[in-house]
Amino acid sequence: MNNTAIVGVGLIGGSFGLALRKAGFAGQIVGVSSQRSIDEAISRGAIDRGATLEEAAAECDLLFLSQPISGILETLRKLDPLVRPDALVTDAGSTKQIIVEEAKRSLHRCAFVGGHPMAGRELRGVGAADADLFRGRPWILTSPLTSNIDHPLQTWIAAFGAREIVLDPARHDRLVAWSSHLPQLALTALAAVLHDLAPDAAEVAGPGLIDTTRLALSSFDLWQDILETNKIEVAAALDAYIEKLRTLKSDYEAEFAKGSDFARALRSGRT
Amino acid sequence: MNNTAIVGVGLIGGSFGLALRKAGFAGQIVGVSSQRSIDEAISRGAIDRGATLEEAAAECDLLFLSQPISGILETLRKLDPLVRPDALVTDAGSTKQIIVEEAKRSLHRCAFVGGHPMAGRELRGVGAADADLFRGRPWILTSPLTSNIDHPLQTWIAAFGAREIVLDPARHDRLVAWSSHLPQLALTALAAVLHDLAPDAAEVAGPGLIDTTRLALSSFDLWQDILETNKIEVAAALDAYIEKLRTLKSDYEAEFAKGSDFARALRSGRT
Image (cartoon, rainbow over all chains, first blue to last red):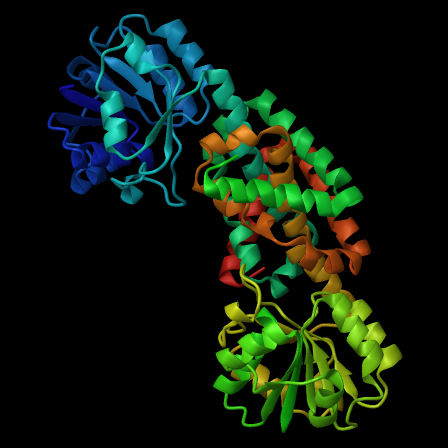
């Protein structure tokens, strides 16, 4: 791997660049992004320089697409005539089926593997990028790289301290609907109903409510694409959650036990 | 105020004793609790010695009831023949209407004011007690102490660094249904539905899900009394939450905006 292009240099893209450098990557790191992000990413040491997508694709054998999902789809549609045949294109989109389908449809001249580093922060943009953002976190790949592509991406993922997990795109999208998208909607709805019907509840709010509503701070422009590209799984999870809330009081004790079992298992790494 | 009795020396009762001492209370602090809690509370400096309820009521002019709600109700039913006429009885129960009604019904020989210090920790028991547990937190009183009772309890609450808020019991119970009981049920239900239908979601869980499910670790034996004594308000909040979840997708953008407005207001102290 000689040169890497990061397309979309925000929190995830910037952290990818910083993590590559920290892990000893010696090639060029080129950023494709807004001028403001490029300038900030260079000053943070996350990339060496900015480039157009055309230039970056001509020079780089790894392309990391870390835009919002709709941006990744758009890039995939343009990329095929631009890439080097020895390149690997991967991405960091939060849903995988639609992205992997688009890559199959549009990208023929080089290899592609879908990716999803499960890491984030409340802060956004390359200013919040962190070389250790991926440490200890799952990094999903949509197919086993080693079986069909000879590429050091896996080695870098391991060097970042991330846990590589291979999941097919459908299973990925189902799991994140439950583990990430449903919790987001549950907390957004909670804060929204408090906003509508009990804004004065904040008068007596303890630290618990502040913790609980943290997710409700999430920005819709990140979530719009995610909810749009995972509609069916999200609807199924939301329906099951509503049903659980409807029947909760018929056996509070059993539901508290199940809930604390799950929460404890999550903390112990066992489920 | 010469001597204080703490009835139920757990996290809240123990913290009350430590906070009194830190604030300079010079009288005796007597604990009414299990022998194990008494021993631990003495060694932590939260109380001076253990006593029976009869002994404590005979000696003390402040009685702080910090048992579970059902224990507070039971104590109130026994207390009237035991108390000194110059005593003030207060409590730390998480719901207030049923407790204040029981005090009106049972306690005639001395004064009573309902209380609810809005503080807690994940850990329980006097071992987790903290002299600063109440600092910066609301401390609800169900009637203005100064208007009818000449008592330094208010001064101690201020000395603990807590914010005294006077709320009538009905308004208190409505506000905590929204700010505390609904969030608890929302998160218990979320963790329980993950337990039932998507235990494998934990494979890809990021730190967000761990934070989000923290409340689901709450113990049912604390919540049983709370849910039992605030049924009507909890049911109303839960119904409104279910309706919000059902209609969420008709305008995700507006609901994200409302949710983040509420979450931000909570952090700024403005709602």
